[in-house]
Image (cartoon, rainbow, N blue to C red; front, side):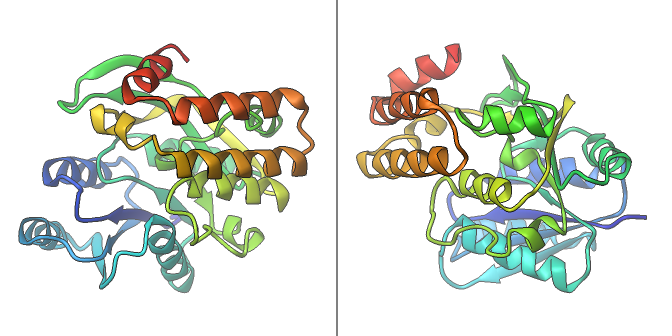
Length: 271
């Protein structure tokens, strides 16, 4: 049986109830060959610490405690290195507030076994609110590598918490996640993947319930972040040979990022 390392970062602001549901959705997967690595990014309060210790009573879960808060990219890189050392075949991403559907791992493993050229596979997502209720927004991503590359000129072609990597993805992209990025580390990882010959794909089936609440929109703002995103996008567009439409879209996203939260919420709903 192929072995999956599940990479799940946690930090002090994560909600215990969401975390418990997220981990439970992994432990209830129909595919059994996995180990969950929870990387704790810096200090957490006693409530979250107790919840993590309780979760770790299941021998399929291992907690890795980091003394200082360094950011998501640093934690993920450390979890990737741990997975390499223990010779896992695949690495599955998961966030501490999303819910994996029961067949997710099975379907992604079967796809990667059928298509050995593919280095990373995602899938469709269904949005849920803070009370686990469906929001009526189903998001599909391009299925083939060529479609993913075309789509990436505008937006990310994979839902980061819904992906499964082959171990060799991080052999091709030797730098892994870019530690200097507190945000958009997934976008840069996809860019580095395209630049290093990684092959992308998505399942048409829904594999994850993706949590979206008011805080989701509030996080997506800031002048400094908007400028960094624009600079990165323009560099990526040039490196990947995209046409002018990609740059125009990058400027539109810059305007959206510096907009008030209610504007982003409206635009997000209609995109």
